[in-house]
Image (cartoon, rainbow, N blue to C red; front, top):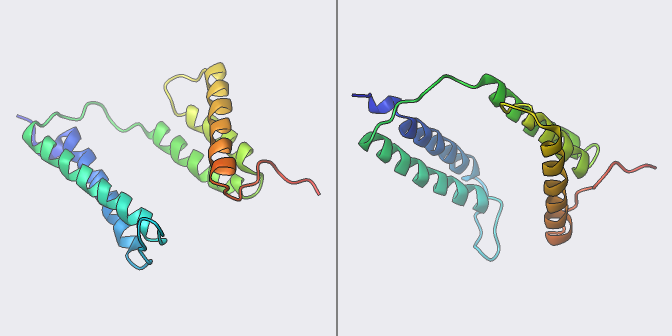
Length: 150
């Protein structure tokens, strides 16, 4: 019988619960607000609580029916997906939203098992259009689309 603590559900639940707990811990000093007038602590606290609940469910499921983790760590995807997020944060303030999204999607796609240029291009165009429509026009967030030339 498999040790329940080596169950993939148990470990995934533990990870979700830890991330959720960290979010709630960090947000505890921010004003919470209400659902109609959210303070800076509202979103991380609510999302952290949801992650904790989901993590608790997965831990419970992993203890009831342990299924062992197959394979090892995928270091390349872990590094490239993390790098893509850091790259997005670095580029978005300097060059704008579109170049940041392009860089993020391409670096993240390199972390997969196979890289298909045409698929990554289509994904980048569709998701960039969606992000511009949602964040720039829908939510009116103050992102620059491209580098300003002065």
